[in-house]
Length: 180
Image (cartoon, rainbow, N blue to C red; front, side, top):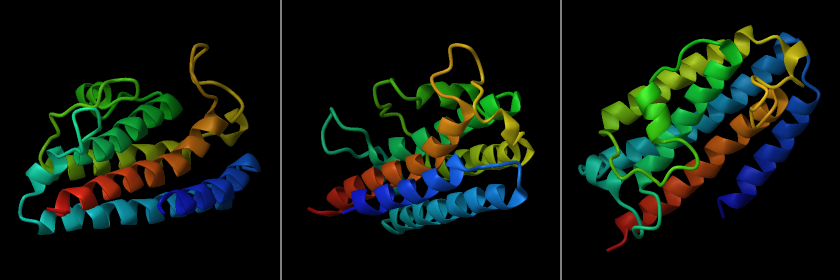
C-alpha cells in the first residue's frame, strides 16, 4: 500500500528534478515536496511517542534480519547529512551517526532515543535545505567526487524518493509492533 504513493511521488518529482534549472521556483518545488514528506515522517514519530514506550518501539524489528523501526529514521537523517555535505562541501552534522546508519551497513540495533532521532532528522534536514538553496544547478550533471555513486541530479531524485520509501518501511514495521 505504501509503495504506490512513493512511486507516484518519485515519478512526479523525478520529472521536476529532470528539468531543474537555476530557477528558484524549481528549488522551492523540491523543498516543498521534502517538507511534505517530512510531515508524514514526523506524524509517525508522534504516534510512536504516544505509545509511552518510544525507545522500545524505535528498537523493535520483525526479526534479527530486519531493520528496527528507528533505524529507518536514522538512515534518512544519515543520508541527508551525507548528501548535504557532498552538495555544500561542509562537514557532516554527525560523522558518527552518518556512518553508523549509512547504506550498506547491517541495520544498527543501537537506535538513539526519540529526542535524539528527532534532533538528527532536524539538523541534517536543515543542512540539506541550506545546501539545496545554495547549490548551483548548473552542476547537476557533475559528481561530487570522481568515485561518487551518483551525480547531483540523481542525488536530488534519490532525496525525494528516499524518505517516502523508508518512512513506509518504518510505518509498516511500527504497525507490526503495535499488534500483540
